[in-house]
Length: 562
Image (cartoon, rainbow, N blue to C red):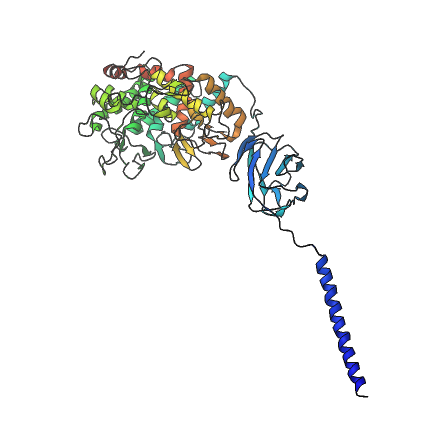
């Protein structure tokens, strides 16, 4: 009897043990049948390209056709295209963009072809995100950026080249007529500058009014009335002048100086030179007119004779200085030395009937005894004067709105050859486009001072920010008529309203950065209308060069001129 219960207990324990053992065996069986986790290879992108052009992940391919786009992505290891995930490869903000995956012999390559025609001049971004797909672990996020080509369809009806030049002049003229300051008649510094008028830009504007008269945009009497208002305002005792020279900026109502900078609150001899260039051209144009016109010319003569050019030699130095302030004296300390836009200051200073400079100041100060010579070749063009590649194109414009370079030469250079060479180098640089900016070519060129996306800069081949200024090519019509015509057609017909507005062409644009200025600047608008007219008829050149004082000054400095 004692054995049986013990047997029962032992059997119960055995049964429980067998149950546990069986359960563990089943669990072990199932785990032994499951595949071990697969460790995917890490993959990184070795190459990105759009239509064969390689690009960094943060870079961009420009000028891509809208109807044929193939993107190649080369990974560091083999991939499986069948495992692409739409949430990992997609276009940002362009959900309509559909694409096919093309077969390729390279097992490391992802080859994408866009299915539909894209929009013109639009930025597209293909995102390739990190994560486990395509049979690999992609370790970095990458982007393929590209900008499509421009629509070259004309944005305006096609007209003759001559009609287009007239249209550009007429529209640009409005800046100096419709937008002139209502009290003084002077040119506002830029669109939206309110009371701030520019003296140098007003000199350009005076010449623009002469063009307006000759082209029939306004009558002679209208032009005279506006110029007379300007001249009388400038001659008022209340209008600030410093040793006869004007400041860079004035208040268009009060005539009081508006500082260009803290210490630039007095005379600006370069801006004064631009103003006097315009006034002397006006004087030559009206000098044989009716009594009121002749009276206006007499006031211009007074303004001209009051400028103390030789005082700006700064205590008798053999050079001219740019600035003087009643508060800061000569602290700006900027001598006017060549080669730049300052030639006209020395010509007028030598031409002054009251406060002239001697030839020595021109030779030692401006020409630096010949140190302003260059003589090097750029893109196969020899540059007589100035800095490498010529600098911004306004060097070839501002002094030569009135000063006729066609037969002008001295010891240092032929100024026709200089300006043609400078312009040609600027053009050839843009065509070569060493920095790869979008749009630069034989139709889209011209580097000079202007607004740009980050402010204001003097663009040139050595300071190229990717910004084209219409004034650069259009004011160069006398030097490069064929190349300037191509640029004009591109600006007007291809870019259209992006750059064309109520006062002609807006100041600048950057196709690479998809930026188009809304601004107009007097110093950029003026050279367009004046230099186009000089190209067409020589109007301003002929009038300015007829001034007896100017002729005497050029002769004194040793110039040969027509």
